[in-house]
Image (cartoon, rainbow, N blue to C red):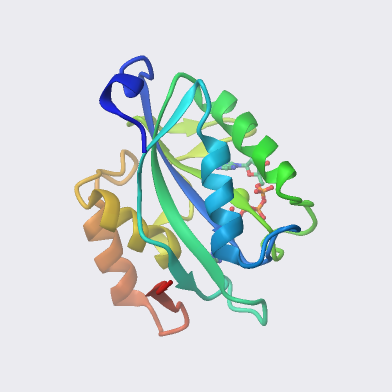
Length: 180
Ligand code: A4P
Ligand code: MG
């Protein structure tokens, strides 16, 4: 994890959702390949300041895909949001992500959950992530890391979004702490 002096030249804060349900080539399990991906995210312009626990989650929408391993990272960065997306997409490619259909099984998915308290809507980016409020695999790790983070679109706290998501869940979204 980055030290305070390493973070001082990185003016932006973002939460990144990380997940996978296919082991990347060269790794023995999802936890090892995802931990290697976290290492790759750190660079001169990005520092990983915090990380949630890992969660074992069922695929959303419900399907016969294998379970995912998910977490959320708290990062500091000198990049603007689209530069950060470029950086993350490059890492997805390194881990063998081949874009097929939407919601396909994947070796690595990196999503920008939030970027400062900005609301961004461009051809390439919607931030905060548009489906954040309906996904336990984002809200559980996000609330663990930053219960008091406020969604600039809805004005709601991460803890509130998590409780609301739980309240409407029909039991189909499994989300449990990963035991190593
Ligand atoms: N894009 C727009 N906004 C963002 C953002 N905030 N962060 C655009 C990242 N990308 C963003 O993404 C398609 C395009 O979305 C990008 O080119 C970017 O310009 P993609 O990663 O190529 O495709 P995708 O991930 O299959 O589609 P989508 O709609 O982004 O899906 P999500 O929301 O990423 O969800 N179930 C479990 N249990 N755990 C998971 O991690 N992940 C997904 C993917 C589905 N089900 C899951 C999980
Ligand atoms: Mg994605």
